[in-house]
Image (cartoon, rainbow, N blue to C red; front, side):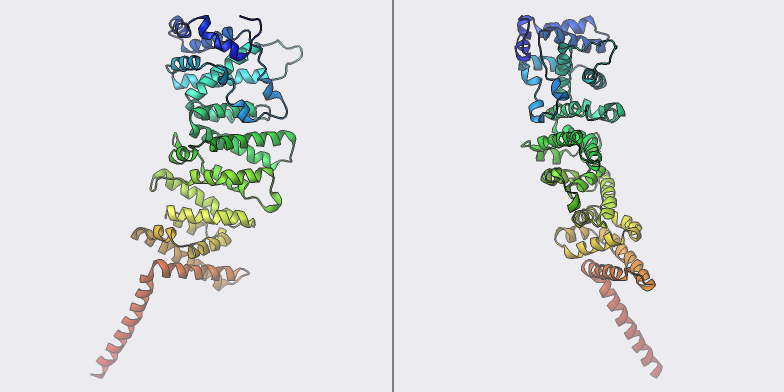
Length: 443
């Protein structure tokens, strides 16, 4: 082998040097009772075969500005022959998910060690280029072939030791690898671990470091959603391990980032506006009536009602629409609304007006069953009583209560016309009884 080769040249010779499958069988037999050692020997095997590679891709993580994700995602596997990849992942399939998760964390720790600047007077660790190339290749194979390993280690990746602008590029790269195996895993990891980071960075003064980090985080979401099958896959697979791809908390952050006050708009705002419609569809996709969705709609209703009362009119408008959606999807949100009414008067007026102004699907869903109608009727009556009390007591916002009361009456008349009939019947009955009493007294 030449004293210096590129990664594609070295990788192409793996099957020429010896039989990869035979080598993997030998590793399995030699360490049959220690599966952890088998994985480490696999990395050693790759290290030996790639020993002549002078590969500086790791420097991309240290550079400024950060590279485009599209240029990073297929490295290093784009340089690995398909036959080598297929043989390797078939062998990796025999390991338990728990062991592979441990391997993912081990690999990440080794790569982060390589990224650390050398300490003066410190012992030089095993950080040769051939070692990190071997680890990168093995880690990429595991993440693509078994994306759920990333789902399991996501809580670990939230720990302090994995935070920071210098560590973010490699974490994004890992999520991008997993998304190649399962698009849903990619989006879940983004919304669970990266979106909160973006939100916090967005609150800080603008700097080169946080701008690059925010750009890289958005690139991952844009790359995932650009897949031609993204909508079908993500909307139909909204849950991973009983967790929503876009949790209610993540959706709240998404709303706030997409609809900031006009004075707070930044370059990233337009990019969020572009990806928001599909992410919203994923966040609200549901199996009607499921217990999980009932919990989700109640959480979404709670924060959307609070946001609907904010002075940011654009955000409030979107939040109002989401609150109405929650009511139509889960009528139990009505009971929740009664408890939240006093603290969210402005928002409640907006929601009532939205219910009055919009018909079609909203009317059909709310009137879909007698129990739904009964629950909504109780809520309207409860709110009307609250309004009447507030109007009687007076105050500076009495007009808002009157407006809310008017909307309640419209809703009652639209969905419960029988109430008006009952009132009319009661009046007629009273008149008839009075007339009968008069006639009886004259006899």
